Length: 531
Image (cartoon, one colour):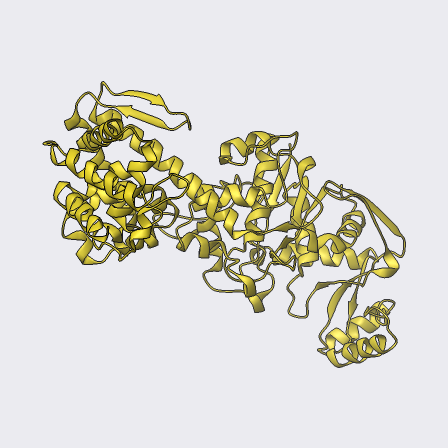
């Protein structure tokens, strides 16, 4: 059975790159009916951050990446628990296992104790740098007799355990990069156990991957140079070597490595900013992968990704982190969720509701009565208000009915960025100052004379309305167009400009509906005064 693992270090928040690795591990396992494991690699105690492990687990749970094995916190007791048969899944709880395996490597001649001081190592590296050589340990302690090593230990000298890299050509096939090879002479004798007794990443992850029966190691490109060290360890222990897949780097727009200097890199930062988990997953899934085969679809749910993901479609080249694309996905998913929710609300309000799609594929509702339609619009406005209320000042909330209507006319903008709602609806409350030229439009053949005639006729027909609804306004204005014998834009453009004082705004029917009859006529008269 295929088994993957995500093995983060609890040194802070979950990095976007870490989430990408976790997601690909999860998707590869799910696609192949395998298991996905979470393991916490906390052997670097100097970088350990209190609360980071809890945060990692909570973030993965929030994002929806359910792991089959790994540490969990009990919902009622808050205590750390282990799920699975190969735990514990926190490396600091497995130190005895690593010590045992380090000794096996020493006994087998695949590792050795190094007693070199920090000062000697620095001096050695400085000399190598001056000679323009790659900094590598010179193996001074490699052939130290066991008796001498034991004497140093008894004398209280500190030591590390180093891997004895075989001086031979090492080849392996990476699932992303194809055939890769390194020569042992170019690889440093890696420290496997530090002087504090804790293992390094290299020993711990190989030992754990074997004992947890991991079949596929999927990780970032930065670990590619370490792979021959790990393969050498597998071979030294006499274990089967897993498959490796090294994912491309994440890049800033300027093609430098993704870093906090150019924007947020923690998943939690995006959660706090209101990005949905669907948008984050969708966006991150495409950072280095696409379905290929001429597929133009970009929007994928987690369930869809589980069905179509494959390592064969992962790119070798770096993936650019484009925040505008994430914004687009967030808008797209918020809209889909909102539309689905409103569809259910409409059906609850009117069991006899009729639905049909317009030319753009959007669902249009036909309610059994105008009262039911008004009830639905109110529910829609309330839902939009919930999204943006914290960003609205009190004056906007004094007339609740008007506010709910206004919000409906800018629903797309609220879904995109609720923080800008005030700016988007302010014209309903305060008519911006504008010049008469705004009422004209050369392409629509609307000059000042045409604008004046259209506004006068619009006012005449609108005054006759008893019921003021979006539909009644629409019918009245089309009647105006028909009566004048002009094109729609020659009436709608000057009227919309007069009602908003803006070049870009919602549709003229819904604007008038929000403003109400008196305010609509007042604004038309205000525009006529300019003419």
